[in-house]
Image (cartoon, rainbow, N blue to C red; front, side, top):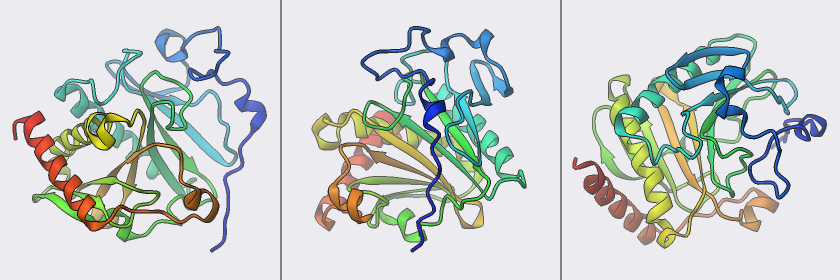
Length: 263
């Protein structure tokens, strides 16, 4: 399979602020000064969608969606109402960018924690338009299916049997736009589960990826982040836990959702 990597501009990356560097940028967090932001596309309260000031990838348009004015905030700490509003706003922004003909594909994702590959602590997502690449080239439909633990008319949730990286990946599929609030609740619950229950609470980082699928379905995939396994790094071979473990995690997540949301 042909590998067509994105080109990373190191010179631009050198100027980016980074919360995780040992020698931190002295200018502080740029997202904590909203009055100084520019190239804003849209905003809703303290949620702001804007052009990325440090476009490190060639042949792309990189944008940032600031989630909250709370520097230490996260999906896991927002109120139910706030998280639902965030998912509605960010999905609308993603759909606007997807409609632009200059992009071959559009990616939407979130980094959280020191192992996630992110550079800033302040809660944000990224929506990136790729002009030349198909960002979904290496994925297949089976990456979004698995051991189902919740299935209603608008939302289906499963633990992936064929993860993109592994080992435990939570797929939260929005089947119908009418279920967006329930979808948002499951995303919030899944993120909390990863940081508090999975691996006995040893996980401090996650990635959240959003994938457009057939029939207007949107999959939100939560991936717990640890050091990447060598099979994936060297050979692009993902690993998955055995069926017994997948079933066990599905049961635990189902119970966790019932307890935390009273549903």
